Length: 227
Image (tube, one colour):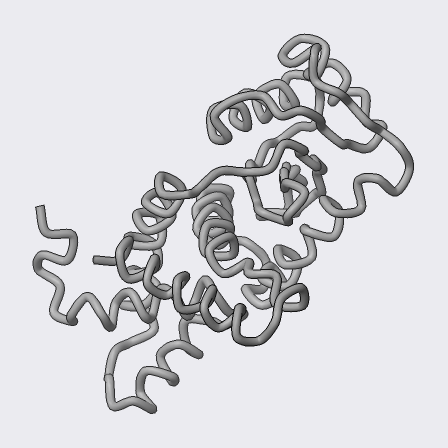
């Protein structure tokens, strides 16, 4: 089945617009202007619908093609306010900064922690060697019941990697003037994490030539999932 059937614009334009929106801190109107500068006239509302429809599809394909995560998971949660209600955004990253999962929940008790841990085990293909969290008791409950043999560290400052990973979410949340609904937030953050992982190339750790080669590979991968 053709993914782009009945769409007036070619796949290259659609995938480029979706990539711009999820890769950079841009609004749908910003993407509209960038396309207009290239002679492509499309409304921001159409771009919004593209991002809803294709962002999830691209993210799903990227996750299937992901080459695997590290053996240490850094887990943290922060509150987000959606329509006046406080919710919690759970996030896990590995030692290389790759985002394993983001999951929005209404609570941060033991049951919520267990739901998130089950998602992590499914998405990563198994248990890690070690998890690093803060001292929230809910993590201890989930650890004891779901992965008791995994090393669990709650050392002070050890979880800074996970806490700092929330910053990209905060930046986008401010740019979008807060998330409008739980479904919208979950959908966007899942796609945003998949695109982030693809272009998380450790630019400050490698030589310029190596980075350019990695970037070329990332673009090639994007073309495959957007085909």
